[in-house]
Image 1: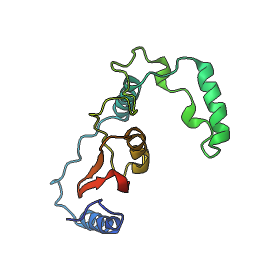
Image 2 (image 1 turned 30 degrees about the vertical axis):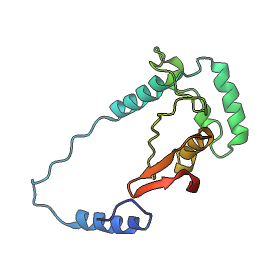
Image 3 (image 1 turned 60 degrees about the horizontal axis):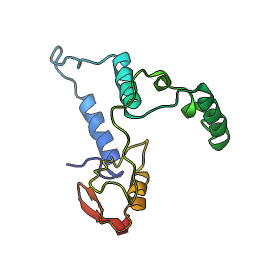
Image 4 (image 1 turned 120 degrees about the vertical axis):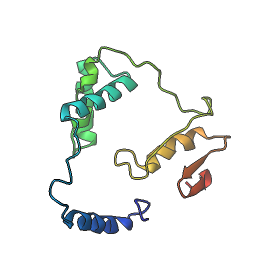
Length: 151
C-alpha cells in the first residue's frame, strides 16, 4: 500500500480517489457521514489553543506585535499577530510550558507530522538540536531511526 510517505505517492492517491469517486454506488446504499458543526470545530480549536498557553491580555501588546509583523512579514502583514479570543480567555493554562534547554528535563517526547503545514520537520528538530548538548537523542520515523547527527 502506498501512502503519504513521499510526495511521489500523491499522484497515485489522487488517481485512486478519482476512480473510487467515479464508481456509482447503488441508490440509497450510502448515507452521508455525520458532520460536526463549524462552530463546534472552531470552539474546540480555540479551547485547545487558549488552554495550552498564557496569552497577552494587553491590547497594546497586540498593537505592537501587529506593527512589527507588518514590516517583518509583508505578505500577511499583522494578521497572525492580531488579537485572538485567547486574549479574553477566563482561565489560565493548567500546566506551565516545558522549557527546552540543556538544563531541563531529559525525558521529553516531541511528536511531529512529516507533512504538517504549520510546523515543518526542520523547525521541530531545532529545539532538540539546541538542547541536545551532551545528550543522546534521535528522530524516530515509521521507516526507522535517524541519528541526530544526520538531521
